Image (cartoon, rainbow, N blue to C red; front, side, top):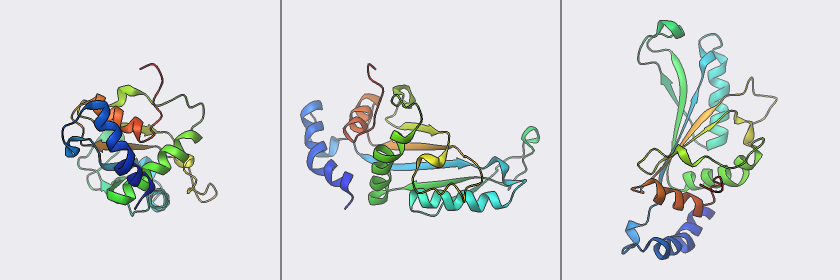
Amino acid sequence: MARLKEAYNKVIVAELIKKSSYKNIHQVPKLEKIVINMGISDAKENPKAIEIASSELSLITGQKPLLRRAKKSISAFKLRVGTPNGLKVTLRNNIMYEFFDRLVNIAIPRIRDFRGLDVSKFDGRGNYNLGLNEQYIFPEVILDKSDKARGMNITVVTTANTDSEAKELLAALGMPFKKGK
């Protein structure tokens, strides 16, 4: 079992029950899934970019990414239906907890000039969205094999009903939010 999942089951659930006075253990919010999206804008000009980005994302997540294709043609972006334009990975269960643990304890502290995560990135339903500018904050990525910095969007989906419940859960799991908000 993942280290963070074990800590959640033994310590954090009891802590959240005391803090928020839940009547049932099943009312306590928990992580449902983590979805990681990576856009590949240069896939049309450089077909090798898809392979490089896919290998980097699979190293980061431990799971093979799904290739996403354009649903519509957009002439302003020189995009046609069916052309590859991104990668997506959905993590659940133990792999999700292991990734979240690495994200919070290893990757986020490596962000340059980091002052804490913004609390306004909750969506109103208890889910948190985190945008990263480069994949190099993960130690799994080898700089020599990478062709360029690519950003990614990480969505942490919880079973919480409100943003405040989700913030308490993520803070208890170690997510470093900005102080004073």
